[in-house]
Each structure stands twice: as structure tokens, then as C-alpha cells.
Length: 129
Image (cartoon, rainbow, N blue to C red; front, side, top):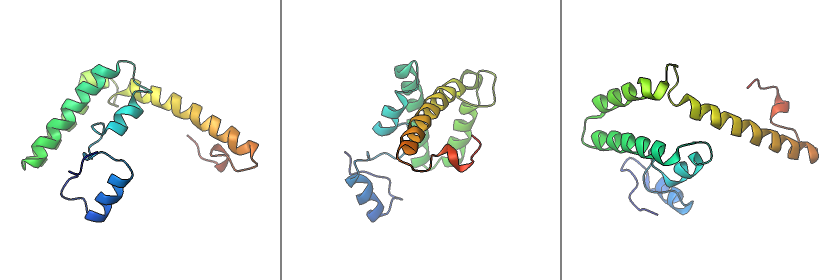
């Protein structure tokens, strides 16, 4: 666990995050927690995490050096590139589909457990997913 959370994080928030076991870095998919969650839905985990980690570290480093606008523009361009979109409009669409399948299975299990306890199921609230 790192004590080095970004400077923009307020001391109270920082303390709460660290107490809850969060890692020091607050960038998507760099956090060990995010990487662990992704391992459940990504086929080629190591290659995917290495690629994404490199992109996020680059974004973080450039942002910290004051190059935020160009860093974000380059990152968005990367996210919209052919290797990541594979011809769709969504980057990492296969991974998103895998996540959705897993998410739907978890919601069904949760709903069954809620129904068994005479509680309102998530899908029973009328949302169209």
C-alpha cells in the first residue's frame, strides 16, 4: 500500500482510501484492484494489462509534467485507433462484451438470491439493460 496518492487528493479522502486498502495510484487499470478485476474478463490478460498499463503510465507522466492537453489528446487518439476498436466505435469492444456477459451472469445470480429472500431484484426495478 502506498502513501503517495496524487496531490489533488484531500487528506481525509486519502486517509479513507488508504484505510480501505486502495493503492496509491488513482489511474484506471494501474491500480492492482482494477487489474485483478480485469483478470476475470480478459482473455490475453498479460498482454492487455501491459499495453494498457504503459498507456496509462505515459498519460500520468505527461500529465504530471504539465502536458495534460496534448497527453489527453494522444491518449484519446490511441483509444480510437484501429488496433483497439477493431473497426467498431468502441475501444476494447471484445473485452467489454466479455465483461457484459460476466456482469449479466452476476446480476442474475444476485437477483435469484434477492428473490429467494423476498427482496426486490435489480432487474425487477424496470431498468432496460
